[in-house]
Image: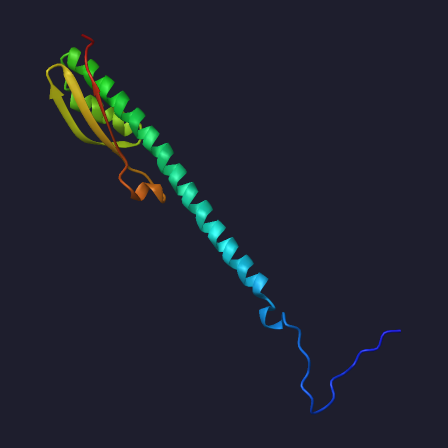
Length: 129
């Protein structure tokens, strides 16, 4: 049978050498969870920016091609490019004509966290040769 020895009155109680660190693992776990949460949120935002960047490149390419086709048909390339960019959730920031080429610069406009950043893209299109 095991008996427990109680400290005598007047004598200091014996404490384990680990007692001052009691609960330290909880603090470390909370810090680790916080760091992991911030890391996952940062990766999610960066992934969203990457996706929007690709969408803006596509929108700029499409707007430049539509503008070049409109120029070949004698229409205003910037009006057509602006319409195509708008349909692709982009704002036409710059439109210029150089000889028979159309130069386009667009930026993202949208909602959410990624929508607060201006994510630009540019493209050039014209006849081959």
